[in-house]
Structures are given as structure tokens and as C-alpha cells.
Image (cartoon, rainbow, N blue to C red; front, side, top):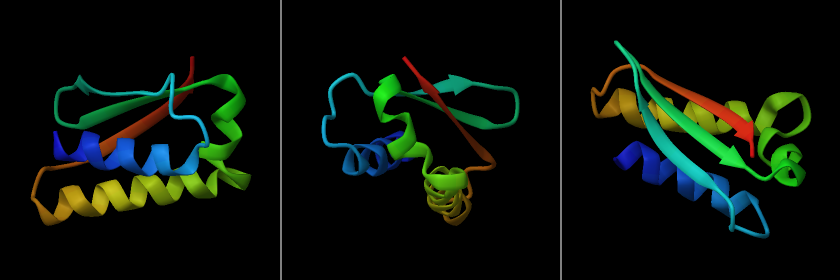
Length: 80
């Protein structure tokens, strides 16, 4: 649950309007998969130029999971 809260915090800080954002964990075999859904007009703010912001979010969340020995984390970002 900590990783979901961290991901949600990072995404919400990027966007001017936090309504319509959904962050949830999807069960997978060996990985933790976090699904981030944002409004279509906010996708560019979350992805960033060349995916730089999305990669930064992934790096921060994966580092947190590594420190807590939680295993591998994948983050999927999609539009509503």
C-alpha cells in the first residue's frame, strides 16, 4: 500500500487538477503492478518529454520497493 500512496502523491503533485486520477495495484505473479489512470488531457504532464517524467516516477517507486525488499515494481500509465 505504501507504493500506491507514493505513486499517487507523485502523480498528483504534477497535475493542476487531481480529480479523475486513479492509482491501484494489480495482482501479478512475481511483480507488483501499479496502474495509473489519468485524464487524457493530462497525459503529457505525467509522461513528460521523451518519457522523462514517467521514468523518474518509476525510478523513485522502484527504489522505495528495493529499500523495503518488496520485489520488482512495474508502473503502467494510461489515460481514462
